[in-house]
Length: 267
Image 1 (cartoon, rainbow, N blue to C red):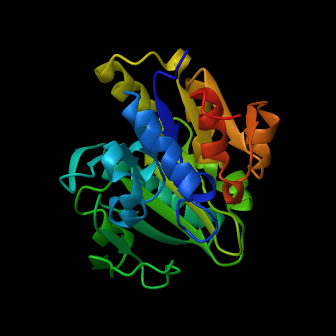
Image 2 (cartoon, rainbow, N blue to C red):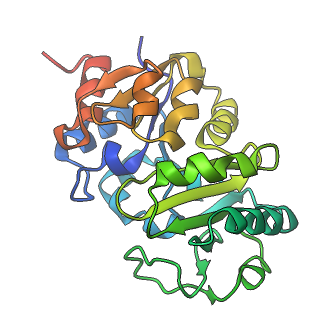
């Protein structure tokens, strides 16, 4: 049986270390779309960082950006839906987080644009922030994600200390390793899995027959939501511990390799 839907994360999953999709991954996704299988890209990236999807535009993928807080129409380059964060709840959470970790700095995603505190570590974004100021300045307009960054703590360490502050109020996850820690905080219940379920209902796609690929904690719920979740070979330990099927690494075209098998193209 062919998959009812294919969902994939981008960084560390569909994209190689260079930030580009391999020819093998692209070919497999285009073939799946040709067979009538809906393609869903579910990423922590904001909608302004989706140029890497140009090679699979012919597949007309559904794009769930900002960890499912934004549904983006790639063909028309516009936001179809956004799940915003309650400003008052965010303000309280941010204050409590800073009391625990004074070294953190905040940013927000608005959907396309973004905002940041002056000291927020820049991530190579080619688009300057719409708002540069304090937390109250940033959350004065509707936003979809709070970013919590540290130059001295890893994402895992930040999550251990600060994720409990969000319990019952907001949803906290993370998607990067490296020297700069970064937590990504959305409205309560908003995850890649949440928005994927809504989309699958609209499409009439049975997620028990869907396949999904991911590598970081922000993919965990999505991989649980489908019948065939695949963690990449170099996935975060939380995904490894969950016991998902394993795909080759993102630099080995792992998504393409698995899809070829599922579509009967290998061998």
